[in-house]
Image (cartoon, rainbow, N blue to C red):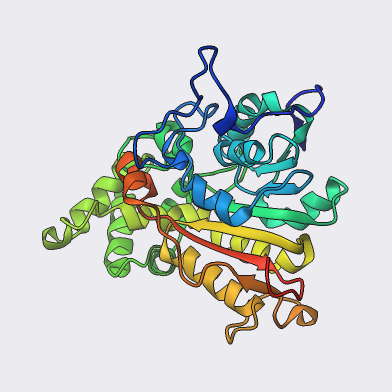
Length: 356
């Protein structure tokens, strides 16, 4: 489903660092040593996009280009891309959360027809481009994981810190919920999920605790599940963060099929990224980062193949722009603690030239 932000012509927006208030002062006021990314984008309300300056540096938005924000959220990164290109590029935003699409549509409305929003999973990126009559993208951004809007809303069931229904669906219309998993999956499947998707060393112990608890009564809320996990966790290891964190991560990944979706979108890169086009990926845990690292290595001619990559695309397709993961600055982490686990990797579609 295509969601339009307005019918007005494409907005010509002056880059924000050149905008002025009526009194002549710049719109962006930076403290000494502060970077532009350490200011919240204008339209995103309480949402703080992560590593904006780094994203723009590696994505390199240009006027006339087509850029895909595969994880739109509130539109903070999309706004930064549009502003970097002076409002003279096309931004295709994808999200499967209707609430995110609605909010981003309002936030990005000033850019008019420069913005196209699509309700879909980023796993279907190739289909989305074809549905929009687009063959290639000049830039692709993936900001993986949850948005702050989802975490902060107890009704979505993502957070172990706030009591809410055991839901965790990024698409509210999807059939599988976290409640169904914890109340119906066999113990061995629960153990597999916690071990594989949460990297939880106590997976077997926690799976048994969940099964014992649900025999008494179904687990319906995030608070109930968090208490079960906490009571089953040895006191000696509780000081290393909340004991339910890995369990909630594992359930969220299972509910939303996140790793399968990431594999699919990475495998589609050779088919959707234009020569000279760039891809930037922000990941927030080791499973995602490892997949991105291996995918980029495989597509840059390295020894690690990318699962699902067609044989015709084997070889050096990408050139790495980041030899190792780029971390957020200390100032950004201080301002936005949720950025602390972010890892950025970037690559460019090879054109056979030696320079960008």
